Every structure is written in C-alpha cells, then in structure tokens.
Image (cartoon, rainbow, N blue to C red; front, side, top):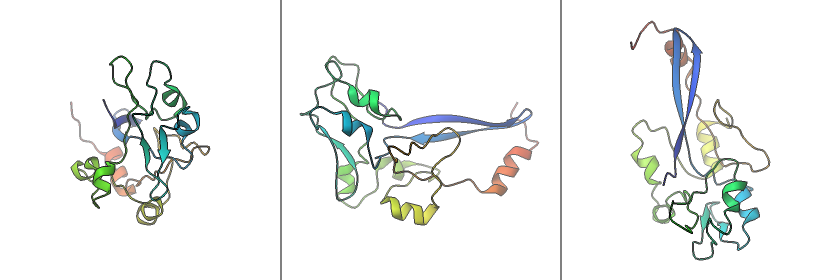
Length: 166
C-alpha cells in the first residue's frame, strides 16, 4: 500500500532536459470530497488540526462501497488487494503528531523536500504557491498544500547545463 506517490514532471527541450518528481499523499483538504460521499461517516476531519482520519470499523470497505476512492480527485484513499479491504490513507502519522513529532515521511526525506504543519504556518514559511507542473489545485476541495518553488538560479543551471548523463 502506497500512501505517498511520485508524479514525474519533465521540462525543457532536448538536449537540455530535466526531470523533477512531485511527492504527493492525502492533502487533508479543507473540503474533502471523500468525507462528503462516505455513507457511514467513517472519514472525518479533526477540528483541532484539520487532519483527515478514517474509522476502519465504520468503513464498509471497497466491495460494497469504495465511494471515497472515486470521489477524491487526488487518489488518496487506498484499498489493499484483499477481499473487502477497508479504506486507508495518509493520516500524517497522527500517532506521532500527538507526541509533537513530524510524520515519518518528513523526517525520513533525505532532501528535506517535505514538511507538515498548520497550513497557515506553512504558507508563512514557504509562500502560498499552490499549483506546480504535475499538480492541479481544485478550488472546490481546497487541498491543504503549498509548494516551495525551486530557486530560479538552480533552475537556470539545470536547464542550461552542458552536462550529459549519457
């Protein structure tokens, strides 16, 4: 089960091309589509921090239901291959969050490309960029995400580089 996935973004023109990867997971939307369609209210958004969580005991599973997976424009709800699997998705490692720790993906990211926290603090830290190549911001759902833009000088080096990996 993959709670994070990478979107590949290719830029430039031959021979000056580069590839970037956009790491995504559940975006803990302000207006989650998955919550709106869940017939048992198994998916909820915590009032204190906005984290979207799943009550697996209340979830009907993928066989009779699966509406959450169909509704989410980002594909966050996941079901294992087993028969009537219950929905699972990133919950920002809520057990770690309760202890004041960051999600494991944030702590483990070798490039420090991921961060998590209250959306207002992330916007203050990184800016309010909410659309990048490979990602569409759906205003209806208002995903709780910001992107840190690559520094323009680094982008120029990548695009204008004469280095060949072949």
